Length: 146
Picture (tube, rainbow, N blue to C red):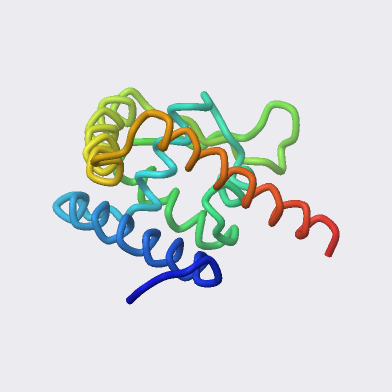
């Protein structure tokens, strides 16, 4: 299929599907999906997050997020505790085992990035990032106005 400026969203969607399939294939021996890897990544960047924060970042509803987190808890990669500030909130953080496993998922991410960025200059990578951030911001602004 040939893409043009009016089909950019379709192309972004296709790339999203391709990267998820790649990640799912790499995680398949571990019975995880790309969303699990993304949650682990988020928790490596943020020491702890609430279920709601994770749901928003991974763009899933709270029940789906709870299901994903439960799998990570069962595998002893994350732990869930009541918030000290608000007993209604559950706070998720990596366990020591989760931190080790995160090294594995980081390798997958790095491999995927090297495939995606093949033949890109540093400037092209930076331009792509800036343009995608701008597009994302436009959509976020629209969400808050709706």
